[in-house]
Length: 152
Image (cartoon, rainbow, N blue to C red):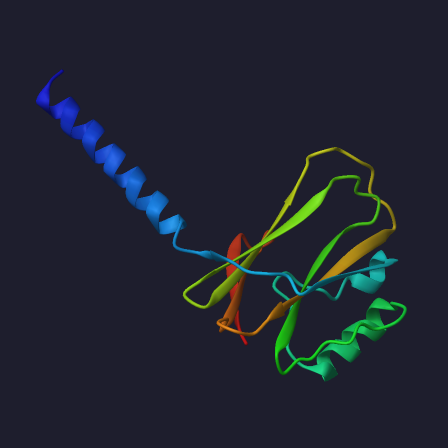
């Protein structure tokens, strides 16, 4: 094998190792609660990617718009919530994987990929997290194809 090829392979392996180590520096975060609410599609249209709720007043306003039943009790001095919206007819299994890196929380919503026909209802999942060690929330906006970081 030529020395140039050996050097190229070595550099490739080193760069993959560095990116793998960088990705591994994040830590798992516990979900304190998940509260699903089903509503008409137009009732969830106000929820933008990266919506983070940090006060009881914000949560009360959002809850009224969602038209949920009994409102969950959340202590916003110690917690905050992130909202995730999907079609209510979506048969895919969803799993939320929260990771924190340098105080910034990112919640990955992983799901299977079964096709379905859209319905006129959505399912909003309110996900509760502890504020401990978290200073901001990072989310991806598929419309703008950019990440949004919201400080707590």
